[in-house]
Image 1 (cartoon, rainbow, N blue to C red):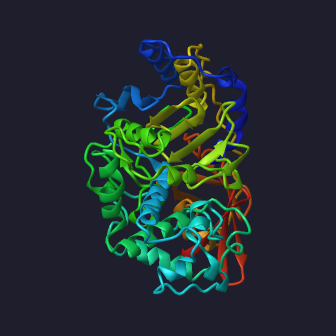
Image 2: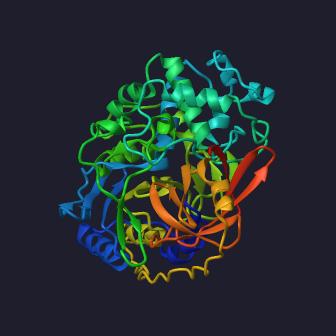
Length: 480
């Protein structure tokens, strides 16, 4: 998730205090109040569209789209509009693992080398790595993406996942499994590979058969490259408020964040999670014990939404809303989803937005407050100010050529090319001009909020060329 998430936790806590008490019986109906709150939030943040669902008990009580799925055509956002859900795919991958646990095909605390003996891990410490380590971000595998994550269709061949797993197995771990915490997209990809090898079918086929079909999620798939009519995703800009852009998708990272779903289908999953595995049709998807294991707070972690939390199996578990709160957020650069469950209140909400703007997050509290009979808290008006881009420093051509090339970063490939007396970059799928502030430091000059002012620093490390983004998020040059 983006760095702007780091400040959100305090927003949750300060603006959502009205949700901290016991929830009274919801008003009937409250759809009009939700419509007004959601519409107001979209207008105040100048967001293209959103889809929102509410679950109370075992019923979906609200499921609607608002705004536009595509601004150019005027196509409306509905609760059946497909959207790439990002890292909310991780709890789904955990459910796939738990299906195998229920079938006695795997165990959470058995080293995964037993299930994938064909994968040689270079780091001997990997011999103790378990599925529980992978599902709680305690595997020691590096964070982030690797590869062309911002192209669609991207990597889609049948061998993509195994290639990624063999690549990561050749790298050292950050720490011994179980001895630290690092939110690792690679770890979730590896969990998907274990599911694939144990089941004997692709992770896409397994999810379709063993997760989506039993839950009644008929419009959900991991085969993102086959989905027509996706919502158009947008990036937040200072002058142009909504820049259309491609979602970050790649088949090798499918299990970590590439599921395509709809608000209707997300609601069906949340019903099962809220009701000990009982689906909207009344069937039992997983045993109550396994559902409770998924949302049990297992290890301390750092929330993607800011502040400390605990991690379950793909879920953050804490008391953000004054009661037991189980939540997960997901982003693919141009689309965002967020799921929140309050198990003790038998309430859940799900959100999908087609622009990444975490200033709209307080809408979650407004929705929960309205459902509980309270009032909405207004979402802040957007009032962004572009960063001041420094005057360029003259850099000699050889110095610029020294840094040109393609780098593998946690955000996917970033490429740098000299054009005249400056560098340009394709970063997160967007072409931007770089302003030099020294021979090795450059600032992005862009209208896009997430990019403008970011600092790239290059340096040599032995024979390698290293890229740092805002002081961390290292990338390594793959080719000059």
